[in-house]
Length: 241
Image (tube, rainbow, N blue to C red; front, top):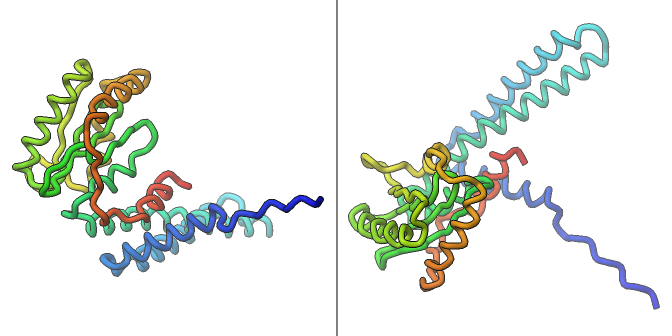
């Protein structure tokens, strides 16, 4: 009896990344009308610079050198366009997310490997939310919502965590634009620049201990929207995928 051939996957990874790129561009374009001009200008400048550099090095001596100069110019153009697109798109998406419940969760999703993020470990009925990041600085509690209510919520969470992981530093951050707060667009960079106080081998033990806290919590549903699925595509662009 003949075997049924294994069906091929419907959508390869390349198509998925392309869709994420288009979705990110469309979302960013809503608030940054000049996005296309900036990306096109950067690509054109990169093309000229790249071609000129390769032409001066290898392009004047042969037809092969001319071809290499064209290829080099295209590579510079692609790189310059992607860099400008990533930065302006990130700024535009953050601007659209600013002030919406759950926005910090989308920003924390851009943290790279070595960081463990738990969304909405604590909350209030008014949708004040505390997220938790575990990484080299220790434990970082990130609050978004009303600053007055968040101070009490963060203090309570800090004490709860310190009882379980007594030797691990616990930090508090409130997302916002007021004095002493961290803007949403600078949240991930701020966390990554924090002083390293916990070794990588200790993080696994810290995360395991925190499960004791999480086991006693009720399930917390994250508010629907505004976290865009295109943030995944943006993270891929930042990592050079």
